[in-house]
Length: 174
Image (cartoon, rainbow, N blue to C red):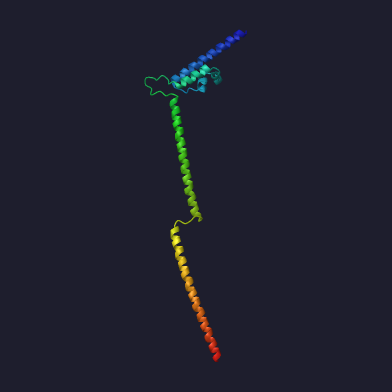
């Protein structure tokens, strides 16, 4: 009885193996995806069946790398290497673009920060040279006004002294 069961299991395994091989050939001929899941689905077997039978998995990977037989009116054959090269190129371009975006974001951040700094009134004005000239001119004017004030103060003190002397002289006469 165990012999009959073993024979039945072996026959079932052979039928499944035949279906997997046929599914690989069909997928290769029709240029459908050659993945373990797609082949297992087409052969009506579980994916683990492919992983338990390494020769079938190796046949699948070999079929992925080999181009399908081109038909008389078909274009250039697509191998697994060409989409991988396209993917590598796309990844490299995405990396370059990400670096460029980061650079532009940094520049934009600096620019917006400077604008906010100036708008807040905390930063130095843009016409610092004009303001320095104005400050110098006002300091000179302030110095001249102080000197003039001191002169006027001296004249006022002299006028007050003369006024006191005259008032005293008038008071003494009378």
